[in-house]
Length: 212
Image (tube, rainbow, N blue to C red; front, side, top):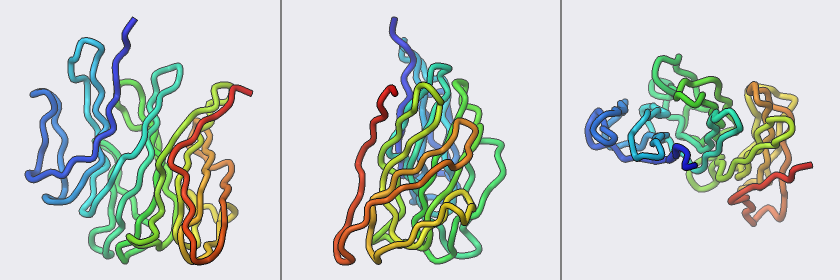
């Protein structure tokens, strides 16, 4: 039978709030900046909930998937601004977190929510990559037998993941392809990269995981 559908949206709010299907609302902390929005709609077309990554700069959701329990996993990136506006909030009722720099760098994130839209955890990765070579995640998939999350994209400077220096990656000076594996509980398990010539860019646009 048809199941409910989750839409990852990046919305440029021109007002402090946005309304989805006349029932769900999402708040934007800074007008004229982007907030990443996850919007869940039932199989009958009823709006169920909407959650945002809110900050005073821009955030973008690029991909989303779900597991057998209908938990939701989204990936994207945000801009960390100056020391006065680098805070980021993953969903209603959660505490704000710092980005990884204070100079308009782009950091990647993985975010897990329950089927009812309750934020469960998030992790942040990257360094000080700017708009030319941002840290970014374009794709996400799950290992069905472990529940681990595999996200793919690129990073643009020396990077760490979830604050763990043991998972540091060096940069060639431009973008390198990135695969980031996170447990179902939000712990970084592994990071891998592609690394080519220093004057070339690499990036993954999607990811798939085999069943074994």
